[in-house]
Image (cartoon, rainbow, N blue to C red):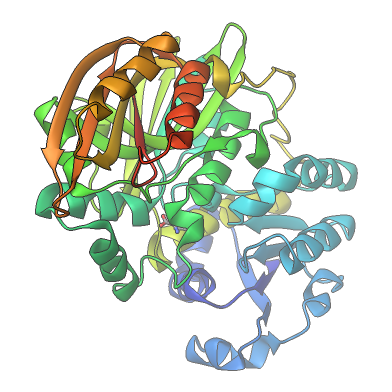
Amino acid sequence: MPVKIGLVGTGTVGGGCIDIIQKHREDFKRHYGIDIELVRVCSLDPAEAEAHGVGHLFTSDFHEITGDPEIDLVIELIGGTGVAHAIVTEALKNGKNVVTANKALMATAGEEIFHLADEAGVEIAFEASVGGGIPIIDPLKHSLISNEISSVLGIVNGTTNYMLTRMDEDGMPYDEVLAEAQAKGFAEADPTADVDGFDAAAKIAILASIAFNSRVVMSDVHNEGIRNIQPIDLATARDMGYSVKLLAIGHRLPEGVDVRVHPTMIPRSHQLAHVNGVDNAIYVTGDAVGETMFFGAGAGSGPAASAVMGDVLEVSRHITLGVPPIVGCTCTDELPIVPMDNLETRYYIRFVVPDRTGVLAAAAEVFAKHDVSLRSVVQEGTRERDAVNLIFVTHTAREKNIRTALAELGAMEDMLLADPTVIRVED
Ligand code: HSE
């Protein structure tokens, strides 16, 4: 008996999954002894189903999938936390296994979803929610299980990595590079989720939860995006021997889990510094394995469908062999989230200030007052005649002190002509 599949969402990723099933169903039977049959597809657009040759399986009502007693496994690929939440929870309650690519859902409602899966004795798998086609969730749950993971560092947003790469290599200003990313279809018309770091925050919440065996939700993640980054920041970082990446960071510290997303300087000699364009990579350090990196395409039809179908086949194998769910929720510990204020690191801070006597001295005085020791100061002109870039690099300083100093400088009259650019250094 084939494992019966219902698919919700026939867009880029869903279409890729349909294509894989059609192309490789016979191979799956021959190679793995698993037969899967797509029995229903649901979306808002019947033309998408037609385009992939499954118009005869189309429904616009997801209940015809989540409520169909014949269906063993539901693939949810519509994203978001609204209808997708209803689809996933209803499917689980009805005893169906679920495969999803939905990072926002898993990073906000993961606990509820695991609980429902546990109650129903079914599986929830979500490899495609982080890193597109890169296998990372399965390796963390299986291959690296003998390790205590000390850190997970990820370049997990292709759009922003593309933008930073263009600014670095071609000196393109932020607005131009954003327009280009939108024209190429990487960035959405509303680019907020990518450029403000929300997409990466959901992904590191998922990775940190698994790596550190402790639930991390999206709201636990301090996130800053790349809106204030300009080519001058990339060029200055390069002179200092660093690359700038929107890094998703998770560290297991003695006092808890340190989890954050922000523009970060990493040494140009680090493997992650060489991950450019829309590529993604996740760098994992474990006590037995040491350092290991997972690299590949973080988005796109084929890569994301590859990750989804990997989950579908593994869960189908369990269904076929009558194996109960092997790995459910792994968040067995309750580690505290380390407050961002406690962070101690080095900072690159660029101000745009009026070119006037005393401005540099005043800024330096505010830093000194808040116990922020400066390592270097550089002044560079801007396109505006009366404004200059004032770039400070600090010695190791406390986040709380940096923020207090920035707030004080921001409140000074005629001081900052734009929001400061803050890049933390991860050595
Ligand atoms: N918007 C994401 C990115 C892809 O730019 O990497 C989907 O997770």
